Figure 1 (cartoon, one colour):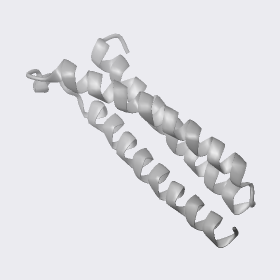
Figure 2: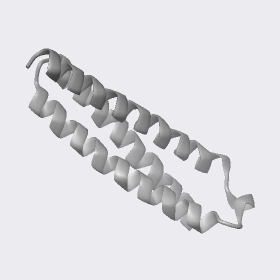
Figure 3: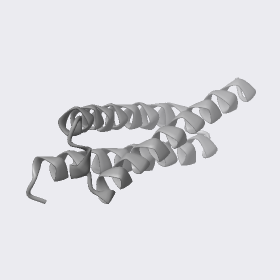
Figure 4: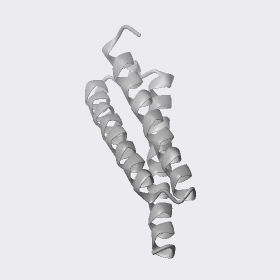
Length: 103
């Protein structure tokens, strides 16, 4: 990885993976009845998602008008971001539902 494009893509990928992993850890904590821990982990997931989205914005700005420079793995990193967003938002809803049922 030696180009700016590569580094931006890697930043998206790294932070999106971290966000998804934290979201699934939150789900496990919720299932174990540890809601405070689940909420903390989902907050950390949100922070990683924010970093991934910032890197994605930088990447999109960088390639604007130079779409031919975008490689397949750049698109792959964006796919990871989208799947982490979906996982995090779904798990947030699950935590809220669990909390309501056990309140």
